[in-house]
Amino acid sequence: MATTVDKPLAVRALNRVGAALGRVGMQPSLDPDDLERAAVRATGLGDFGEGSFREGLERLTASLQDEARLTTIGRIAARTRLKTLLETRLRLVDHRRVNPEVAHERIEQPIFVLGLPRTGTTVLYGLLAADERMRSPASWEVARPFPPPRSQDRATDRRIAATDREFDQFRKVAPGIDRIHPLGAQLPQECLALQAPEFASYEFPTTFPVPSYWEWLRDQDLRRAYAFQKSFLQHLQSGYGGEHWILKTPAHLMWLETLLAVFPDALIIQTHRDPATVLASVSSLMYALRSSVSDHVDPHDVGREQLDAWTWGLRRTLRAREQLPAQRVVDVRFQDTVNDPVGTVARIYEHFGLTMTDAVEQGVRTYLGENPRTKHGVHRYDLADFGIDPDEAEDAFAFYREHFDVDEE
Image 1 (tube, rainbow, N blue to C red):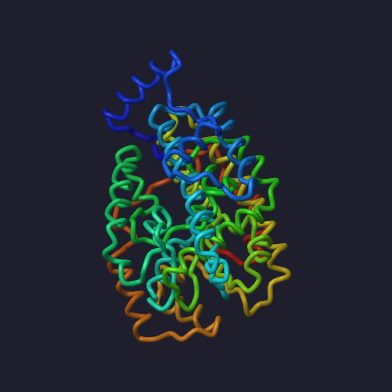
Image 2: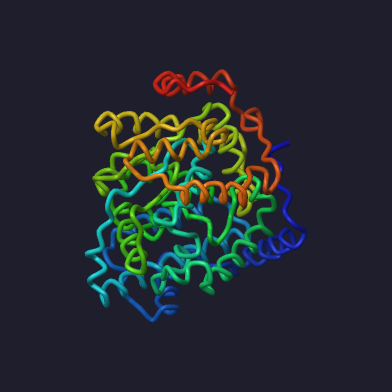
């Protein structure tokens, strides 16, 4: 069954020991004040910048403690991630204080890839990021951004190996995750990680079962999260830049209006695929990620949440796109990306007035050669595993399929 997640024996043993210790009050703290103190001790810094992040941190930690039912490893992972994000925030604020000129870095016409999850956003992101004239945030650069990475070190920086070691550790907790979503220090990172230090990011519902935090997040316009992302990009660009930033996350569908408010000259690529297939695949991804940190994830709850989240997000995107000039957005079908990746990139370049060179085409082919779709095996999933009837999914997404003329698979 697609929803079965087998944890390694060592992971199960550690979780059992940790559960016993937790019953006598010995467990990693997720108290927001304690997390802040730990970040201050680790960095020697004390200025977190504007306090807008605090509400999200408090909402998230409450949801993690009251609802997520984290395993020992899950609790360690949550504390580590939140503490690291607070450290990043402290260092970013301090770097900006010492280097105020960073605030003058111009983020001009960034190109955002968005679309329903599992519609080819990741592969298209990789294809576009293969153009060396462009700039995309590599996973290691986002995880370890201090000092700002330099162009000449982007293939040899020692932070690359450190980040890959962290991914290797995560693979031990979530075996087979690469079949669903590839991980790698030098692969381009998603925008969610750039927003996460503001603690108003869809990263957290993706990784943890935090329903009340998700309900709170839905009511936020996320302007402060996108503003933090812009500051993060300015920081990275102060090391080296490119002709355009290439950026991506499916969750931009939910807050496209805010994205355009913070990045008013942004160029948008929206990907499309049969939403019934998408729903099964993204539910499988969410279930795998959350099951790596909790033993109490219900696949039917995941499926229901994903159906609601992405229909809600698509309706918001349709409203935002009504105000977006046609020359600033291009629609890309999943099958076109798969069947004609070079032609698809060429069409995007032509639409945005970019130059498609031989080097760009070679970069696309090199990326495809190094990252074939079946590199880590086949990802199998079934909508029935997540309690969703195909007819229900069809009805829920009918407005989207009709608007963009999306075929069934």
